[in-house]
Amino acid sequence: MSTSIKRIGLFTGGGDCPGLNAVIRAVTKSAKHRYNLDVVGVEDGFLGLIQNRTHPLGWSDVSNILTLGGTILGTSNRANPQRYPVKKNGQEEYVDVTDRVVEHIAANHIDALVCIGGDGTMTGAANLIAHGINCVGVPKTIDNDLVGCEQTFGFDTAVTIAAECLDKIHSTAMSHHRVMVVEVMGRNAGWVALHAGLASGSDMILLPEIDYDLDKICDLLTYRSRTGRRFSIVCISEGAKPAGGELSVSRRDETSPDPIRLGGIANKLAADIETRTGLETRSTVLGHIQRGGTPTPFDRVLATRFGYHALELLMEGVFGKLVVWNKGGIDQVNIADVAGKQRKVPITDPLIAAARAVGTGFGDLAA
Image 1 (cartoon, helix red, strand yellow):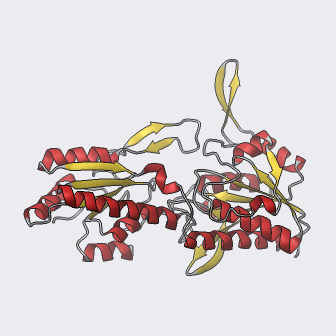
Image 2: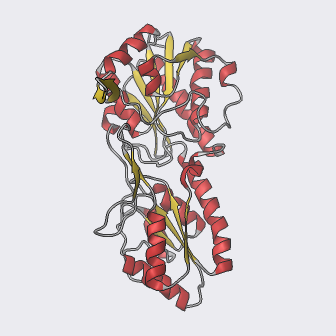
Image 3: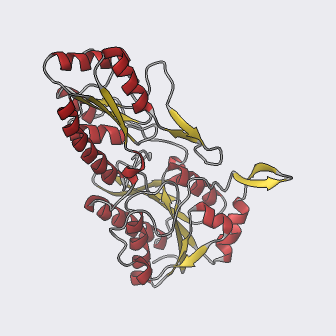
C-alpha cells in the first residue's frame, strides 16, 4: 500500500443494473479484510453527494447481496452536479453545485471515491477529478457501450433475459404464424440486440448503427412467408430507425443528463409491416425487465473482479482510472477518455458477418 487512504466512499449512478451489489460487496469486503478501511456508502448516486446522504458500510451490510439485483445504495439518473435544478423566485433554474459536492466529500472525510456507473456517471466523475477528488470508476451498463471496455457487467444478464424472452415469443409466433417484433434496450448502441438476436436465432436484427429500409424488411418477410416459413422474429434495438427517419422517443426528461427516453419503435415497425405486407404482426417491448433479477454467474464474477481491482488501484495511489475488461483480462483506461462518449457496434463486427452468413437480415440488403 502506497497511499494514506483510510476512508473510501462508493456510489452507484445512472440506471440500475444486475451486478451492482456484487461490486459493492467486493469493494467493501476487500477494503475491510485486506486494509481495515472505513467504507461509506453514498445513497442514490450523485444525488446523495449533493444532499449529503451517506451511511457506513460494514461486513454484515454487504453479506448475502452477491445474487441480489438492483443496488442496496439506491441510484439516480437525474442528478447532475453540473446542472442541478433549483427553485429561484418560483422558477426552476439549473446551477452548478459541484462545490457543494466537494464540501460534502470533505465533511465525510472521504479520501477517495469508487464511482460505479456508465458514461453519464463517468462524465460526472471526470468533473470531480478536475476538482481534486480522487476517483476510480467501475463500468456499469446493460448497454455495453462504454468506450475502452469490451464488456461491462450487467450486459450478459440483459442479453440472457432478452434471449430467453425471444425464445418464448418464438413458440407463440410459430403457433399463430405471425411476425413478432421484439424491442430491446441499448439506447444508441446495438450490442444487446445483436447478441440477443443472434443467440435466439432471430430472423432479423435491427440496430441503431444500420438504418433500416422498410421495403427490404417487407421483402424478406414476404419471401419467408411465400416459401413456407410461416412466422418470423424481428429483434429491434430501441435506438433503431428507418433510413431518413427519426428516432422513436417515448418522452423527454429535461432534469436528466440524458433527457431523451427512447421507446416505441417496435410498435411503429409492426404497424408498418402489417400495413405493407398484410402479414399478421405483433410487437413486444421488453423494457426494464432486462435490468431486473439476479445477475448471471458471469456478471457476478466480472463485477467482483472489477470491484477488487478498483480498490487495489486506489491503494496503489492510482486515480482517475476506469477499470475495464479488454482482451480477456482486467485493465484500466483514463476516465477522462471515456466521459461523454459511447461505444457503438462497428458495421464490420464479426458477429454481424456471422449473422448474415446464417441468413439473418439487418434491414439493409435485398432478400
